[in-house]
Image (tube, rainbow, N blue to C red):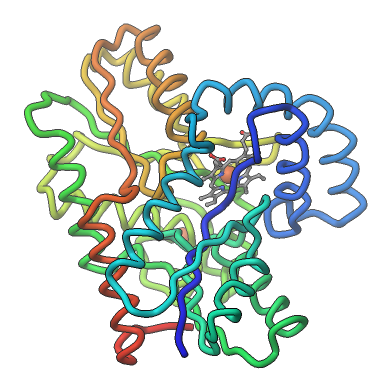
Length: 343
Ligand SMILES: C=CC1=C(C)c2cc3[nH]c(cc4nc(cc5[nH]c(cc1n2)c(C)c5CCC(=O)O)C(CCC(=O)O)=C4C)c(C)c3C=C
Ligand SMILES: [Fe+2]
Ligand SMILES: [Fe+2]
């Protein structure tokens, strides 16, 4: 029997420093997130980051926490329930970090008699810190605990025309009647080093003006290319005017160079330039979370207002919107008919 495992990032169990510390410890000790040798990673994460960050992050989580729990988890559960209504195959949900583990998700499916799993990382763009860490862990778990099952994965879907259509429709609907001068596409950042590591040609990704627009095999695993493509394809679909939109990268951590330009500095620049009305969309996240609800909708808005901006419109993630549910259910059902490209 076939079954589906949707996988998102995860959240702490509660917005307390203790639970946030536990969650961040697991997250940041992942060698595909902080990709430095184990001794250096342990010193950095346990010796420095976990000494101060949990308190700071817990305060941020408290501002966005819902009575049902973490927005990212609650929204992912709603999505799973809606998809379950649109397919006869069992659909389970897991998180890469935290209590809703991938092991539990696989076990849930196996207990229902599933032998062929479609692993669905809920990320439109490929990144070593997201898609890759999920597929690698799922395969390790399969080998160790579930050797009787097979796993196929859904690759990054950033350039699928039906995804671009759903995202564009969502942006259009949320901006109906809103007079904005600039639309910012803000993606989660990654250290530049991650882009170079994922370059399967070992030489294409220069992280300059041209590499991401010059055709290359490297783009299958280039997060930067995939983000720039989402912006380009949506802009084309919505016929956005040149200079009325741009791309930036948010949520950097530490002192290494991360992808540029940074979202906070871009918002600052737009405000200083005299832009009064801006809108912002966050297509690296399918579910609203700390990074969209706090960093963008609260901090980003504050920066814009401080710089003289007036109206700051945040476009929600696709969350459990019916068009998005239909899109994912359609792909899942196509997989059962062997009509979905997987890896
Ligand atoms: C080296 C650090 C990090 C990398 C690389 C990274 C990549 C990455 N993350 C997401 C999606 C999310 N990240 C979220 C929170 C978050 N991310 C980092 C660090 C890295 N992320 C931290 C330390 C945190 C925790 C919060 C904080 O202390 O600031 C979230 C939100 C989770 C939630 O509970 O709401 C998401 C989602 C992507 C897509 C990505 C690479 C492309
Ligand atoms: Fe992150
Ligand atoms: Fe590139």
